[in-house]
Image 1 (cartoon, rainbow, N blue to C red):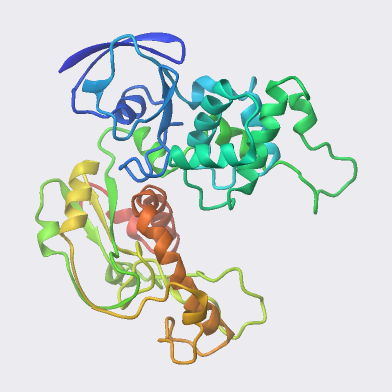
Image 2: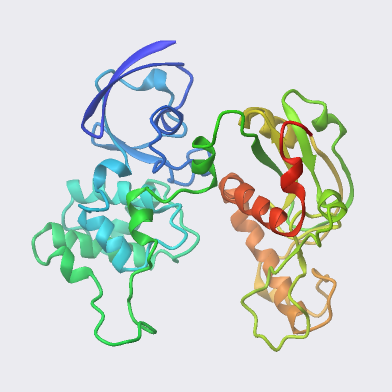
Length: 381
């Protein structure tokens, strides 16, 4: 154990901790500063970015043994609050940057360091800066993020006010306007909780979940063997598709909600947990419930999935070719679009761990809404 004296968001903290803990773990687990997100856990996605001594720091890979005594650390909670937002946070709301919101704190941290050092960047400099800080976003397409940074820079230079950025409703309808997403304020201040954040605030003894995820983009599943995982320390239950069905669930979710209402199928082609096929990299195959996150993750890796790998289409033209393999076992307009879904497998290579954090909670909701699994997720199983 080591002792560290740090100034975090302007407050001096004296901490006793393990030297091998990461800065992100200390901020989240010890101080509950959950605006610092852990996405990939490998320093590739920027969700964990904080400011340390004026520099952007990827906290998920920065060991506490490297953090100097009396370091000044700023997290998203120290940038601005719900009642007193920084111009960057306001711009993030105004330009629709906070969609799912998971990446927003890391982007805002990066943007703040940029504008503190370069108050008049070009769009190219903003783009290159985000690339350098490894900030990734799966929602916006990046253009709104650059727009917001440029607008915030104008406010910080005194050329406009924060209020100038905010949409002002004049009629009875907000359709087609720049009305700000109701959840945006919490997302840009780091106060919007995701599944991994909720887990830190659960009562003592609450089971932790981890996913066994697909490591290929397209395959038939021949067998799922959970025996080794079930015997590992701390494991209470390993849930697969057969458990959902045994509890009366369908194991189906509407994975194609964006398609028109007049399509010929009901849309429930996608499983909650894959049992016959893998449709994209990162697909959920099993959920492990254990006493700690470490035990859950170790057991999830021990689930053995025997597969027959199938062609993976990485561009739209190959996906819709006449001889392309069928993805979903349907015969309708959906089939053509379903093939394109496998394209998302490339994104999941980067975000597979991020998806773990976000999807464990969501998958469980799907399960609980369709089955009686809630009763079994206790230590009396």
